[in-house]
Image 1: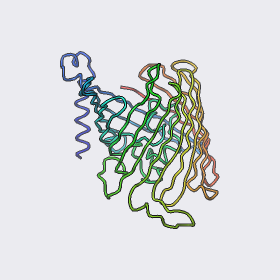
Image 2: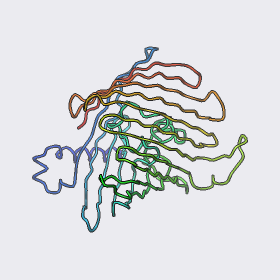
Image 3: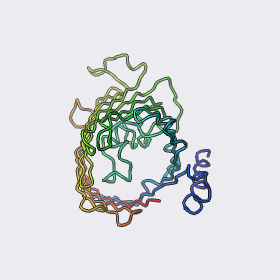
Image 4: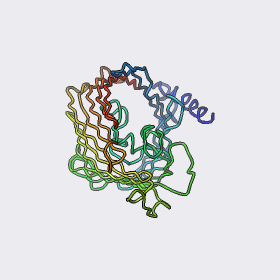
Length: 343
């Protein structure tokens, strides 16, 4: 009830901010920027299982509290999810002391995988996130560790920065390091353990990044036990990615592997696409994931092709076809269409 009350307060606070004239009359509103979006669609497979669905319905308030050369920049964001069970997704304060160093405290996206943190739903080229993100980065109910969706987010503290500014203005190196509760969103820590996460991204050119990330559940699990002839580790993750994103095309690939309660899983995806016009693009992705890399019969393989069209700045339409091969070798053909309305 408390969460729902807070979300309703967010809606009330955001409503007057949607009118520019009112914002100009209230000086304090320069510290508040409302935003939001709504995503809904329809899917059908070859067995004629079909449904209309609401994927996301989010509203957010964000802004700058301080922005000065002497004291740095202080920003905040609060975002609520109204689809399904209402819940808070983001609530954090970000203090950028200098471009080379900053602190984020609160609940926000983790630095695990590039797709999770750098590609928000409105930027993602296809309708669904890759299997690597869904199963390793707490993005869906299929997450191997939580068995629940936390939207790729955790509560904790992060340190970040950009090093070595290049002539065209982009930073050569970007880093994020943090400690998180590790038990999902909107929850206090229920044990004395924390999750350590880190990522380094290198930008040889502005549109190209090469990165690596790591996660480890800290605590008593550092004691090695023998389980099915290999080390038993409650949770660790490691991976690498290459991402290229220009105004004409994109290419992205990531590999991730790690242990979850003794099982070693791994996965990878490759996605690429071409922007036919500034408002219309086509793309495809190959997904591979196995929950046990030491045995056969645990792998999933998905192939998705799709198109995205922005007929208006605040409307996006997407159409995807996915060929799914599951661990039992069953095959499903899925057609998915989704619209995004941007507030």
